[in-house]
Amino acid sequence: MAKSFDLKALPGFTTIAVICFVALYLPIIILVAYAFNAATSTSEWGGFSLKWFVSAWNNAQVIDATIRSFQIAVLAATFATIAATMAALATTRTKSYRGLTFKYAFINQPLMVPEIVTAVALLIFFSRVKVFTGYAGLGYLIAAHTAFCIPFAYLPIRARLESMDLTLERAAADLYATPWKTFRRVTLPLLWPGVLAGFMLAFVISLDDVVITNFVKLGGQDTLPTYMLGQIRRGITPEINAISTAFLLLSILIVTLFFFASRKRD
View 1 (cartoon, rainbow, N blue to C red):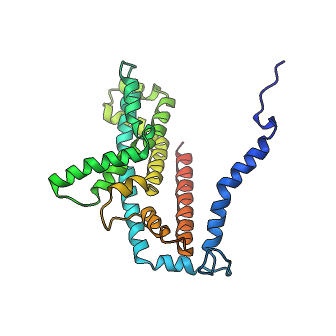
View 2 (tube, rainbow, N blue to C red):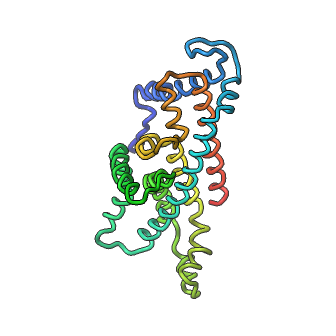
View 3 (cartoon, rainbow, N blue to C red):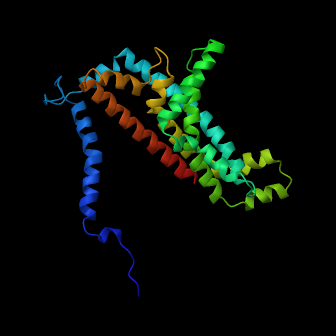
């Protein structure tokens, strides 16, 4: 009888796993620890303190950048999820035909192209639009984030659709339900966990994007990640550690809430 292959039994597996986890999480642990450092310098420990969180909370620039980040992320994730849902329905609720693979590749193109290339392309395109329209608002950032987030929302929604049984949808059609009523009463409730997962991914990707935002934004349109990047260029301070820690905890909270919400609906 052939033995089953056990990856954990390979020599050195545990050592490599420990090294990887340490390399991934030790810098984050150090960052979180120094967010509570009372000393001004990050090279010494001055005791436990929450003053840097208070300082960040009272920083008007941080508050402004945070609000702007959430505005962009919510709108971009919403638009990306709607577009991804329509694309997923169009590519899964149909018979296979020539060109379908190309559509998959086209939808997922932002994932395959380096982000810097997408950023430069959006910069060139939006610069032309600005010349013709004269508009210089947040719409460009929202549109750029939406375009980049669509494939992240598309993948879990399409995976959910492909795993769904078509019996209930066919039964609804046999009972003379319109396509819209079938979608609203049958498909969407079953698809909802995938939609939530897609929205969550799009939201998190938009919230922490730096490259595309840096290329597309105008003066006074800093998001929290680009604001932090600008501050780091002047030197890392405990306030940046505090902002990063709050950002990390918020991201964990959002992912946890969406996980339990989608789990209950599954």
